[in-house]
Amino acid sequence: MKKKLAVLLGVLVLSSVSFAAPKKQAPAKGGTSIENSLDSLESQLNKIKEMEEAKFKEQERQAEAASQRLNNYNNMKNKIDERIAEIEASASTSIFEKEFKAKVAEYKNLKTQLDKEIAKEQKIIDNFEAIKSVR
Picture 1 (cartoon, helix red, strand yellow):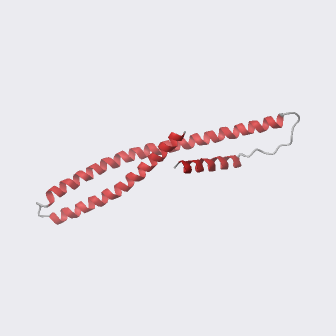
Picture 2: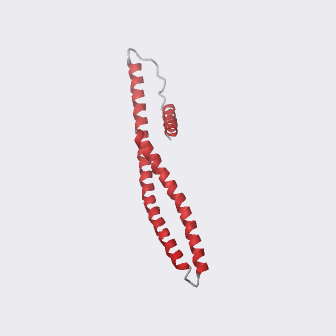
Picture 3: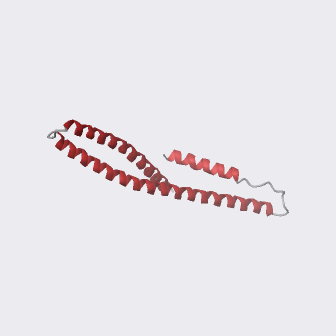
């Protein structure tokens, strides 16, 4: 995870530095070309920091949204578990036992899909927490 983060940040830095390469200037008298170079480097560094901060804020928003979705998914999962338990408890004593068992299978299928979504949202949150811990 840290390697991926390092690679992504490296690519971000290289791409922003290559796009923001200083223009070649004719050397001026005295130290002004050095001063201009320093100013240009400082400007580039500040731009990179701003880009990094913007990316971090975006990932933070994504993690917050994922957290909200995760809470909703967990509530849905709990409700599905309750329904499955209710149906399984009463299915064997019902005339429509077959139909109830079919509904249990559908609920279990839905629960499997929900588990995949939960894992996806948890990964988004975990990735953000890893980035946050490196900062």
